[in-house]
Length: 309
Image (tube, rainbow, N blue to C red; front, side, top):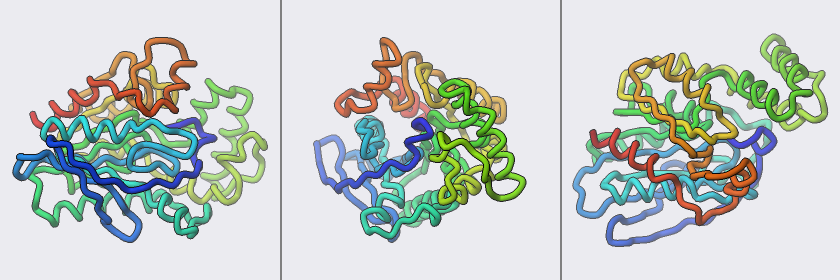
């Protein structure tokens, strides 16, 4: 999850096609809202499929936004496909809505993201082309994925997923990034929970509490990741990066406590966008616009081992 001020950055992406001898890429429209890319490992019949769900904001299938170019989800998908696992990654629906100029902030609902993820799972289950289906949810996509996976998937992987309700996550972020706004945000969130809206909030928190965005925040706040992950009757892998500035390791610890039988892995040096950070927070921040920087190989290896185990 990028810092809260980045929740609604805009981006428009293009489709692609490629074939490299190891895997083949094909673009698919799953629904009127969902366009994505499937990577099929060549020579593997009925492979296992990993569906990758992106994090917060208008994030495309590659993990990019207008002012954030990482290619993190693209590299993750390619890394898995070269190891015999099919992958499907897709643009969040707000990408297409912005492209069609049909998006309004008031219309955005967290439930839409869940419905889209369910539509993707059902689409590939109907195809009967894959031996098993796994869900990989990154950041906000972790919560979306763990809800969509219930009763539908064969396994679930959380990468940098929050372990508490989003209002508590944001208040914790503010405590570290802008402590002077923490108490004001807590009161505004409490007003939203009690009354359905908040009126008295600092102008510095308008990216969260402006009138047009509050309906979306309310729908997101209804879900507790600890409750949702405990419902999963399937193998679960929880991954977090030790250098993640957006989602602390403590969030992963909360998910593990709620799902004690889950595999739990903290990757040393990995940041929120799955990149290896050797130095300071400055290097960490710069990596969000270094699209050629590869993802940490360990995250690919862990997921590969989990799925093919």
